Length: 352
Image (tube, rainbow, N blue to C red; front, side, top):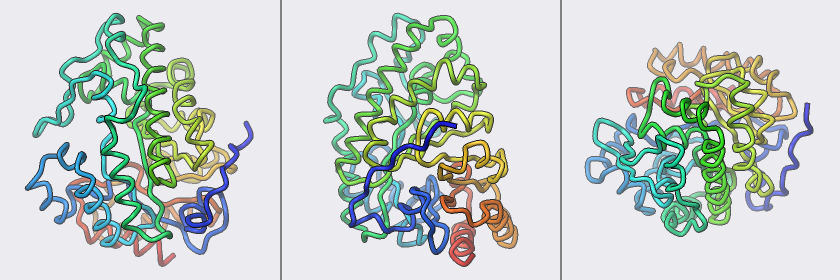
């Protein structure tokens, strides 16, 4: 396997947190825990805020976004704070007409469907129009003590390209694959533009005060390994490379465990593992010179508390006490999740 990435020396101020040490494969007193989508509709406090403001209004309000995440960290007692934002706002300054439609999720009104359409996707030379995200990073960082790192994030090139092409989410990603297979040159042009934008965006979040960044490839599991290597891997690697010189990068994809060795190859000091493979088997695929994050099935949190405790312990047992495990779900917290079960999960991890 290829050599592990060289981790940049963290500032003394934040370097000793459980999360940062786990990212560096250092021994820790207990497994750090945080949750994807940890501030969301399952929390009554979040729903109260959303009754007053729309989703994008919330994302573009640094004060409110930071307040939501800070309250969540305090309520849950997690070991990291991921900024409150979304994968898709980066597409607006690139020329995509984005709307979060009530009951429909994200909609892009001018999707990229033909090879010629790629040329109207603008280069993101300046992240200034996304300055509100950097303000969210700063406000979140200012509200936490040094033991809680701030995680910035971005969508991966494939996932963002999928939204651009489909005009929203999809089950089969038909239009995306058609452009990928039929117009390979245009596909690589689009992916390269997105990768450069993501790279600048992640670095800007680190400049604003994030200690860690995560790349979300939420939809890449629709591909097999050969297609991932040919159409995706070089662009994910380019998106990650600059940030990885500065800070730990968590590389997360969901849907196909066969991609795990390729995620490692694309980059990241921490590889996210979803619930479709046992954690120990997934870590073997990744290689033990990388930290891993995961991987409780999110629907387990809708079961009774005994089941939550048992299944949480099973994940911890599969990690085997090996340095470099960060506990998380295999994807985000579902809106129907009882808060009490989330608290039970966190208490179980902390008490292990």
